[in-house]
Image 1 (cartoon, rainbow over the protein chains, first blue to last red):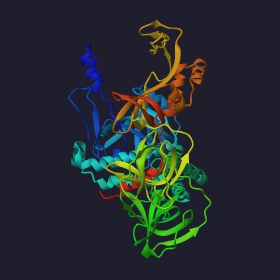
Image 2: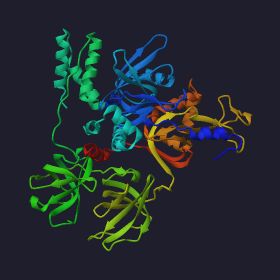
Image 3: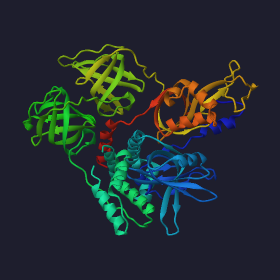
Image 4: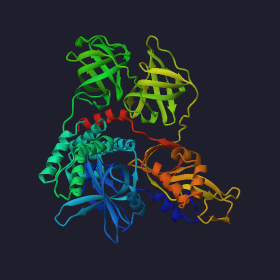
Length: 197
Length: 411
């Protein structure tokens, strides 16, 4: 649909696409180190490169929040650990994410939580890389939602592995990480077997 | 599960640092994390250790490793290449396609269902429909893309008595995966049969989509009536060029009373609700005939200015996300009420009797739906779906076998 009076506005609106929230297991996100910006503009989105071969600007994860810590005086923020069947996500919410921060304030560990947020890679002075998720929202959910997510994440991860040799980011991931698909298939397999417990 | 090993390990570590730890308490915490919250044992051990370390101010308590698994399995845990012992019920038998096969059909347990074959060479006792058996040492392989149990000469079969009724889980037609599936669908189109041996072919539909079905000629098989709704239990689901089809020959097909809505070619999108936008929840609309615009908090309509005689409405604006694509969803009052369990009357009462006002409605709705999985259907315009129907997309253990197969398959 074109509005003749404001063509440029219509075009901008039409090209906006929200970044999908990738489904990634903790054990895969932990291996993620490469990050880059797509485009030259300072407002261009930034991505991390997942080892199974996809660019990722946002993640959606569901797991058990096992620990929560409040940090900082002036600029107070929360750090927390969220556990999935393969490992641990590190998440944080600060004053730039007021919605997530208020949600986090009310959560008592342990609890199942659904997290939408942006992954960030940090390099420590001794050369190690850390990855944490800056939350957009942290919502307490039921076990059912966690189990649903594990299936969802398993499927997405397998889809990425299956396509790895044929996509731009798949090839890049193979070059940068020397990804062994068998390792990630095993990770998915083990995550699924824990569901049947 | 036995937690004494882990709790022993934890309490040893704690006492090595000169502190006392209550084993019953530790086991209680472990049980809660592992059973109630599905935390892997290793991580649960780490969490409990950390908590103790904090409470007792002991730094550096490092976690150890977890335990191994048993060999008796349930159907949904099985994948191609496995050897296992299972207890399952024969829910259907079909005529044997070859002299090398003595029996073939479908086995089910509370976690799922799977095709099986009994080789003629296995010298196995005849299995009968409706009985439970214990099968020791069966092997799983893949047949036409779905898992298949093989009963061979090394398999020990014992009939067992079980009273547990099996209730197969009904899947949405759009969610079918190769293997065995149960659906409730309406017979919406009958096709000409393409083969002498084919009794009937056509389309079954439910809210999530449509699927082709066939029934092969076999003794006692009856034709279905177009326009009728059927519950179909344990049908064979095959995949051909990415599309599913149902073989009802060996399935149990039960006609149902009444009618169900069927997908009319509109967009169906399944994903997680990752964001709820401001302007969701209880809203006020301009009462001027034909306007219906949303008013600001101060009851201001962009066209008709201040409108104190506003009308209340409920809606949800948000983003549904499947990991690859996103859709903005716009959910109208009726569906919003159904999803959140909050009626417009309750929402008005909440807003009028609560210090947070309309925000309270937003917060309560967020609590119930944000971060959950939904399947929405409706008209799609420019990445936005005007939702006419929407339901929670539930966890289905029946999806596990196919995923395990994919994960365990050749790289």
